[in-house]
Image (cartoon, rainbow, N blue to C red; front, side):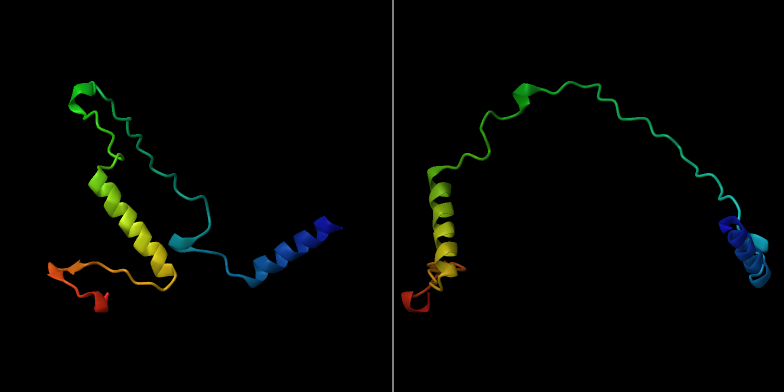
Length: 98
């Protein structure tokens, strides 16, 4: 029964819809043009002596202090307290405006 309904609908659609013609007709799409690219080959060796032996994430005491100040200022800013910078563009800012 289901097969009969499917055939009847297909027949009705073939009558009601125009058959595709010309360039845009239905059919198999053209095959995709795939050009394989060979993977890169590394022929040179890495020189271990050329890289520094310092870990870049280790901070100097001055950088550590500045980072701690920035974090403290960000934490206080969430509480509504502005500790701001002491100098802006090389000009000392008075304490009342900070």
